[in-house]
Length: 602
Image 1: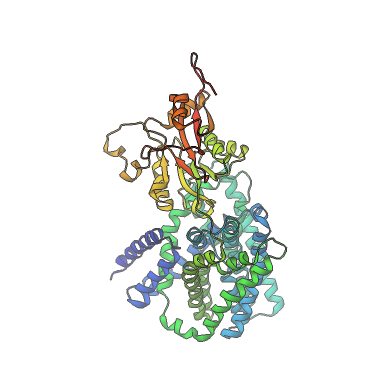
Image 2: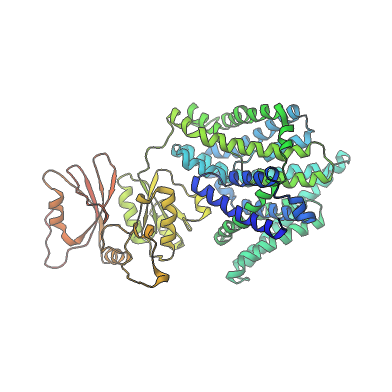
């Protein structure tokens, strides 16, 4: 197979693995790694060393630099303090306990030098949002535990990467030199990494904040500047580039009034084009003989990581919290490893192979074994364990509402008054700001983005209402959440348009969602009624005041939206289902004010 065909094959397989992961709701890293093992050591189609030659190391280095920068962009220090004591402990005490425990176990079980054992321990402390979020969605643990797991993954991703980089920098600095010289070289690397990272973040933040780049160049400029800073830092101080880009991302993430949403969204495309291909290439370099060579000690080490190290970290982190024993048991079992461990371990192995380190050829296979075992085993067993412990979230009855405009906020508040969970999402900051002033939970950004998948809190949320005027985004969000919630749980407003041009035709799956509140009810109509003084009102249906009486009383002034039955389940008035609320139910509707000449007898 020609080099061109192999490069094309890597691209096609990358997309295919991402699609498969999306369909079966598994972390994408698993099919990517399995695909690399298939076309590499199994079938022998791809030999990355032969295909890329001397370019393999630079390509992997640049890719890992981008991964670390993008990951560190998500770390906001205020979030560490804002998500409870357990999360704070897990990403500090828990991370250190995990690192030290695995390092000691690796040294004695695998017979590795302390430096290599410490590096392996640092690499496998990270869970990460890309592997933890699909598992949370599948398991549906109670809200408290879901939030702990999600925020641990988000925060420990860059922190664990920083730990791994620091350990690696110390190993490189201490190679074949006296301790004093090693500490001097390490201090120099740390100083240059932090200074260049901070300075580059400030300069790039200034450029983006003042609009020095046109909008269409901002993402590309950011990427090229990151790669340039990485190369410059390495040229000034050997191996300081990874630390520099990690610090740079963290500094930008914590810069006030710097909008990084577009750059973070760019990560989605980058993940498909770059990171997916990288994992196939890394897995293809492995040899099954390397897995065989790990032997029984690796099985014992893996068992210790699963059944001793993680529980130890969780139990120590939980000191002083109100977590119950069964809460800690479930948290102890859910800790799949992900992207940072695989990518960074492969890069460090490439670099250390060149320096002649013993046992380094075993590190990447061992990391991949930890990744695949934790992802597969915990994905299969976490839900039965959560059921056994009674920690499954009740059936989701809440709503994700796309749109945080005034009308959508009124709808959300009326649902909240009846203890129905809601979360509003919008790309308009002013709408989000007003929703926060109403004390409504929000997500700022596109809810159909990868960033939303990894960060939006959907605990207790099982249905989508599209109440926004964004004609281009509405279909995208609706189709996205049909796969997430199910097609019968996504509802939108009729567009009220009849454009028969081919370019404006709607898909059948999207058309089925346009069923909210009635055929004649559009966003424009609801917004207009709201502007004219219509207000949300909840009305009990009783034996003396039937739903027919309700309709007769309010007539066309009422746009019936929801009905809560006696078990507090929420039913939606749609064009596809005729609701007949019974005594004991409550009808929530938007009621227009009386016109002159009308009368209302309460």
